[in-house]
Length: 135
Image 1 (cartoon, helix red, strand yellow):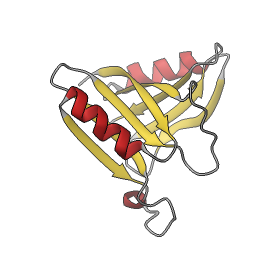
Image 2 (cartoon, one colour):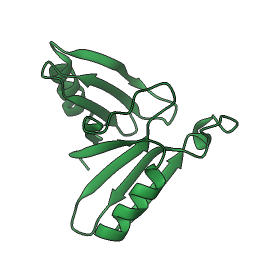
Image 3 (tube, rainbow, N blue to C red):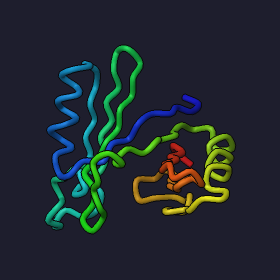
């Protein structure tokens, strides 16, 4: 894989239900990871979805997660554009350009799941996430 662009939807605690619904609509393979799987096993939100990805036979990719505690959930502005892949230079370049004149909300750096990840809001108010696999 080089790079892909897809929507990333934040849910108010019902990400599992929503993503299973989308799987029933579009078919494909759904992968769900909980907050508990990534070191927060005793937290109240341990069974909530930290990351979900649905890949369909038609080539669509839809990602989502439950909004973490303490973060606002505002239907209507709860979609982020996700860039992901393994082309380190390309994806780092996108992150640098997208965050120029905007706001970095999570610096692009290695995360607990092993990938390099960062997020930003561009100068037009659009939220972006960049995940570099195996960086």
